[in-house]
Image 1 (cartoon, rainbow, N blue to C red):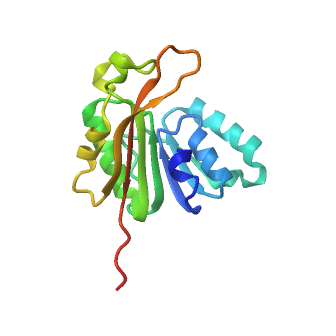
Image 2 (image 1 turned 45 degrees about the vertical axis):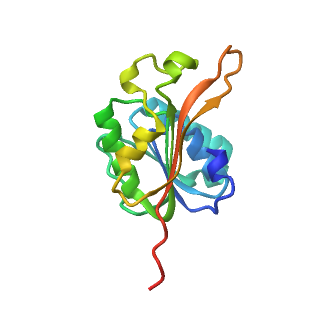
Length: 183
């Protein structure tokens, strides 16, 4: 997340499958207005508590939405950054969520996806042990093909895990919706 968003000017962000809001809070601390979507009321309550602690009077920068990402329909073309981190679901659900996320990216905006890569099962550490919910960055590229995004990065990358003998292997995907040419 930091690698991609640290130098971006603050804008509107969407964090799908936000969990306890780690990415949403990081963005809000840097001036972003963030909608964080997750199905877990417990996770969202934890995010609300953390927002109060970390953001104080600026906690309103993070809007928490309780919804299943399969049903959530984001505003089209409304977000400068859409983040999906470690959403490990079956291929049909993944494809649906990725297409919806791609549609939410504004002109000049980015889609960032990080997930446990399929290779993690045999060559990495941690993460889900069900191959049906693992995928590669190229799978995400195929999911959003035709959605008007240009792929910037689509690769596997190692992520050190403290105390583990091996690194985790993540799918790392970044795409941009090129800004419309001036009229």
